[in-house]
Image (cartoon, rainbow, N blue to C red; front, side, top):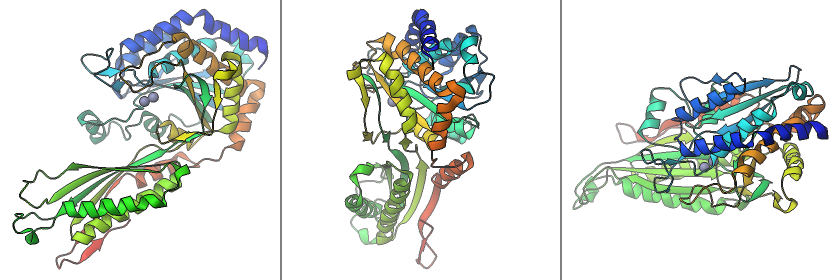
Length: 450
Ligand SMILES: [Zn+2]
Ligand SMILES: [Zn+2]
């Protein structure tokens, strides 16, 4: 994009910097937890409408998008901003009633994306671009649980607890070709190679109780769980470090049995993480086998509840290069990082990245780490205003020149799932309940599937 157009867009953002920082402050002061972001939704809807945009609301859950059409044929690029806060009641600035606080810095994303809408509010500018821009405000990125969320799933209000997954499911990403977002992180600006995906398991062992004085009359589920955990631990030596495999288990329920009874029910929650979908699938199969072995060895029943978490975050390298190019204008050279680092963290942006070319970049002001009781923003200008400029700069680079760059990025990308249907089928496969080990009337073991 030519220098003048870029500077004009940056200038529009700069002139409204107080407005952008006011949005950042307002949302920090009114934090809301996942799928409860209704006040944030209403506040932002009004702000976008005041700019003259049409807000497309999702409806029964918080969240919306606005479309900015250049009027010319071309790809659609989505920008994500996340709406949810974290539950950290110990944080001094948390909401006293709900314990919510924006300790992951999502409020800065909402301000930056609002700033992006300001930067694009110009007919002359849009006439130099091709395609469409879709700005998203998405609910519920953080991992949540509890009765409210069980209710949302039970009532079928949502299919997924990750907002971006839910948006894919609802078809809101249909026709979107490229996506990106900028999340708060360490000081400066950077891109990294990716993150893990995850699958959650609940293993429920059911046996038979008896007095501990006559354990031979019982079927001890704790023993079955211990065999299973040892078998699963033994799989660790097969993990490849570069793939960031993680296995962690937690006994959550012993059935409330008395200490002098053989435990007839043991429940173990397990988390699995890996850097590729293929590795995740292997882990799911192998760890299931270990738990099946535990149940079989003690002659107890086993139910396996599998829930797909988030897909691994993959990054589009050519799209990263556009980000780094724009960042050179906005950040000191020594603060720009471009690393091959990966981590065992997870996010629902991973699911987006399995379908279309995606970048999840980081911006940071050097303040306290996110997810901690000390977290707060020390440089609101950078996190709101500079981030808005970065996003606008990237959009102009992608969609200028007949969207040549965007098309090149789409060309290079190989999806994990070719179509949304394939993605949903995969989710279905890894979200199920299976009576994995059972016995017939004669006590003969029945194995059901893997
Ligand atoms: Zn976050
Ligand atoms: Zn977070």
